[in-house]
Image 1 (cartoon, rainbow, N blue to C red):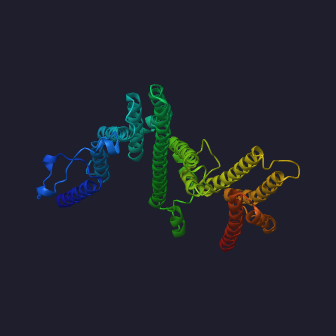
Image 2: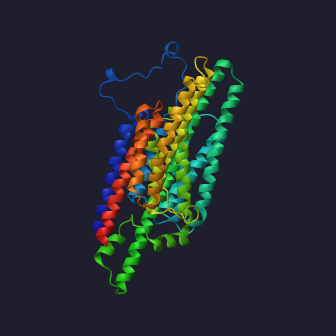
Length: 446
């Protein structure tokens, strides 16, 4: 036994040493010159100050926070490999979570937000809340189900306060500046707020992913305990039924009820974090790309992190896990098509070259694309309803609605409407194939 413990400790130490070496190579943190050695003094790099006349007076960022990030990564790896035994002591776990939050918060403040002591304190506090929530969700204690919801509901308003405080700090700086400097400050404010939104999206995504993985682990453990209890009591469990129970994708009423009784806060907070992350990503998409239609296909899979919640969404379960994804794509493309159509019409109305006179080119453009947009909706409605209840639709309905997408895919002037039409055809084909597969599986079962 002693030899096994020594071998495991040696493996952990080796992993940490290799990780430290790799991080030093790629992150290249600053080190004092006394720690370095140059065998060829003639080729030692000169650390001369840049010529201000050429490059201008640029504010240099401090390099010491790189060490903070390196220490944070090494400590996280030590905790994952159990070299740092945080799972054995609640006090050590709390100290570790607070230390990780403080180090990451200080790194973010030093690298990206160099103004405002209040803003720094709020940012460090938000990172500490996020770190404590993540650590105690992954390794819960006896009291964590009571205080973790409060930690999350403290984190959400903190993010809003930080967003407002960043603007106040920048506006105070712009009041004391000239016209050109004020314009630069406003540009810096826009960039910093976009950075804050990206940070919030990453935090809420990490929380939603952690809760999703934790719930899957709890469900798997509950199913295993239930199955083991039946076997221990001598109950006969068929082999195929045992295999079905071990699949995490199969819903289990007993497990959902037990989880709701033991701690219903996890699914609800996971859903709130998922929706916040998705909403922030949509805002960033509008801010950075102007509302690209292609981005929704990359952002909608975030909604797969939604959980079955007995309080917020009673009917939502494992069977409907793809319904939010497909519905979000359809709604986004419909709203995008309507918005782009309205923008084009308003631009044409404001332009003196053409207007919305009766029979004019503006009216024809509006009516044509509006009708084509409406023709694409039936297939999306049928497919999203099918993704909710998996009830087979009549083949005649699909045969009547699917050809309606062809004119929209060919003659529309709006890219979003064309994407809706092509996606509607794909939805119809997928719906017919899935319905056929369900019918064949049901006949085999009978």
